[in-house]
Every structure is written in structure tokens, then in C-alpha cells.
Amino acid sequence: MEHTTEEKMAILLTYAERLQHYTGRGLQLNAGDLAALAEIMVLRSYRRRSDMIRKGEQEQYLHFIVKGLVRQFYSDGRKDVTIHFAREGDLISSFVSFFSGTPSGCQLETLEPTITLALPRGKLEQLFPYSSRINRMARLILSELILQLEHWELNHLRYSIRERFLMFIDNNPELFHRVPHKYQASYLDIKPETYSRLKAQLARKVSAIHGQ
Amino acid sequence: MYTYVHQYTQLKKEELMQLLPFLEIRHFEKKELILHAGEIDNYFNIVMKGMVRKYISLGGSREVTLQLATEGHFIHSEMSFNTRSPSELCLQAVEQSILVRVEHARLEEIMHTFSWGEATGRMLVARMTAGKEQRMYNMRMKSAKQRFLEYVEKHPQMMRRVPQHVLASYLNINPQTFSRLKRLLRDKFV
Image (cartoon, rainbow over all chains, first blue to last red; front, side):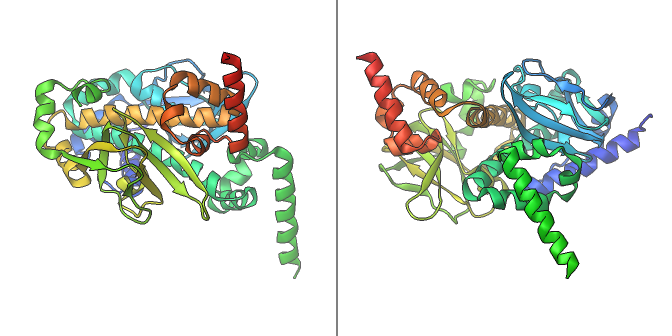
């Protein structure tokens, strides 16, 4: 599968609009920026259950997911903790490693066969001196990540386990079906048994409503 | 301030001098609120002297501290500052503090005006993101004991500078466990 420059630019634009919506600030990429970014974008494809990056490696790509599903997690060999899911239309990377050049603290693995259009690190860095708008894009991507992390922490402090479970399903009905439940439980910081119990409760409620 | 900014960016001294007209210096008394919940955070702060904490109030007297910023650290209510929405978080001076701050609109102006503005902004935000990610890693992967010991080793002076209940909530350790760990540590060194 080959993507034309126009298709790549369309993906970038869609994402730019999303970023603007989320951070409330204009991205202001111009046609030249879009063309330069599209020019360096490469197609990456991963089989189901493959590692996109392991802990300690240096992240080389900023991925725009065209198709598929990715899990971001921390692992120290004993403990495995899911911190994020990314699907079609989302951006995924070990962001801090990508933008700072430090070894990755997290890992990425695909939960489904995944295709991405990716910006390679070295080539993106060569564009930074030429466009303050591309620098701005990088800054807003990182700002969004800070907000995501803060959002998770605040939700975790403010809501009960049950509330977090229901909010997750409400906001991500599709992920509820696509992601293995043990990873959803881990993301929500809920014990797998508790997750199963909450899910069974929910199923009973749903069938009770249908039965009426 | 040059030292603080320089360690995260490649900003030159002359470039930093160009920033001076954009900055304000403010003093805050110990325990003074810098940002109330419900206000839109208009300022990006750098701590020059003292300490500022960012916390959320969860009803009753329950407060959870999310960040402690000392000399050279940056602090603002990210969500509110970035999305221009009312802040759920508060900022408070833990000690008598001096902050250098930049207003939101002025920061955007810096980004537009100077050729190095956006690149410097990117590097500063990368630095702040790394800190936030490290916190998430510590919270989710490490035990309370591990978090306590690592923090005390890295920031021994904070045990004296910060009230114990604030530090306990910052490290997400319940107050009883925190006292027990503190005793354990003291006994070890006696």
C-alpha cells in the first residue's frame, strides 16, 4: 500500500485540527510545512503483538496510526502496567524519548495488526531550524501529553473504582470491545477480579433493561 | 535565572536579555495562594527563591499535592493555562517565595517575536513532560517505601522544608505509613 503526498498531508491536517481542539491553540502549519512533513513520512507496518519499541531503546518514530491498536505500558520484568491505548487517528510514540533523545522509559506493543505513517526522528530534527511552526507542533504534542497524564492522575484521585470503570466504557465503547480486559483493568488501576465483577454487574443491568 | 533556563535549552545570554521586558517579578508570603481553584491560570512561573506547591482540594480537608517546585523549577496549572479554562488546581507558596512569571499572551508573543522562541518552548516543554512522565512511572511502578527512600535520598532538604502531610500526599503515601517510614529511616542512621 502506497500513500500519496496528498493523503499524508490530509492525515497531518486532521491531526493538526484535533491538536488545536485539544490544546485550544492554533498549529498554523502552512502548505510548505505540510509538504516537508509529508515528504519525510514513512509507512510502517507491524504484526499483531509486536514490539514497536522496548524499554531502554531510543524512540525513532512519531507514529500517526492509520489502522490498528497500540498499547503503551511500563514494565520492569515483574510488573506490567498499561498507561495508554492508541487507535486509528491517534498519535503514538515514546514521546519523551522521541523529543529528548533519552532512552525510552515505556514500551509500545501492537494489540492488532497496525499500520502507521511515521515521522523519523533524525529527519524531523533537520526540519526544526527551518520552521518555527514545526517546533510549535512538537511543543503542542508534548503539552497534550502533559494534559493526558494529569487527566489520568486527577481522575484517579477524584473518582471511585466503579466510577472510573463506567467512565472508561462510556468514553471508549470501542476500546471496551477491542482491548483485552486485563489491560483495561491495568490502565484503570483496578484488580482483574474487580474488573470482572464490575463487568458482570454491568451485563446484568443491560440485560435487565433489555428484558423490560 | 539564566542558569535555570540554560540548563534545559540552548538559549544564549543575549537572547535571554531580550526576554526581560516580558517578565514580571512577584513576591508571595508563606502559605499565600498564588492561584485559586476556579480561576484561569494566566501565568507561567519560574521559582527564583522559595517553594510553590500545586494541589487539588478533594472536599473536606483532603488535599493532594501534585507538584513541589523549588528554585529553578517551572510551575503552572497546565490544563488551565493551556486550554484557558478555570483551574481545578491551586498554587500556593510553601515558603516565602519570589517568582519570575510570564503572562499567557506575552508568552505567545515571545514565541512569535523571536526566531528562537518556538524551539526554546519545545525544549522547555520536553523537559516538563519528562518530569511528568517520571512521576507517573514512580506512582504506578514503585512501592510507597521505594518512592519514599528514593525521594529522601535525592531531595534530603525537602524533609525539613515541607510539612509532612504535604510530602506524604505528594508521594502518594498514607500519613501513617509515611511516619513509619520516617522512623525506620531515622533508626537506621542512629
